Length: 235
Image (spheres, rainbow, N blue to C red):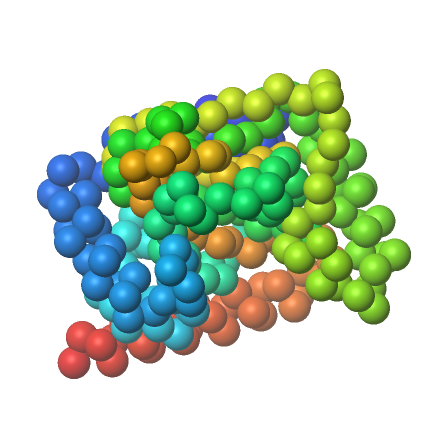
């Protein structure tokens, strides 16, 4: 398998710089604000659910490129859950999730597209480089067993407190992507005043060996729905 898969399995993440070319990126940038305004949840996030994604030809093309790359380069079975458009500024910061180290309660692969150049100054996504992913999975599963009746506790994430973890801010040019397993401790970086971070995030549900048949049926059902919605939009 590829170097990308090795990094994902061993470190929990990989990055691919300049993944989108200038023409593709210009198209993405042009539509970012339009889609954001039409699907806002609050002043810094917008969400596209599965049905909406594939009636938008331009978003569909973006996802197709990412999907083909992942299918070729990683040894995971996955399907797309939703897409988030995120604009983070200094006033959005709070000493809580997602700005503190955590893993997600629900395990996903997540892919960020950097819409603008991102550095420490505008809140680079930050991820652990030396975490024990197997141990983190055990922690996540244990949490669900103990909190099955109260899944909203700690919102979407489980806080990770480990002074031995090393964290790396993923600083890259616009058009680059980073993909990570949410069992890897991570957090959103602090955005300094006057700066902004723009990203598109793809949440990909992955096979967690709980029910292979259910997973494959769900994946197939959504894939058929995706194709039908795309064909309708082309008429």
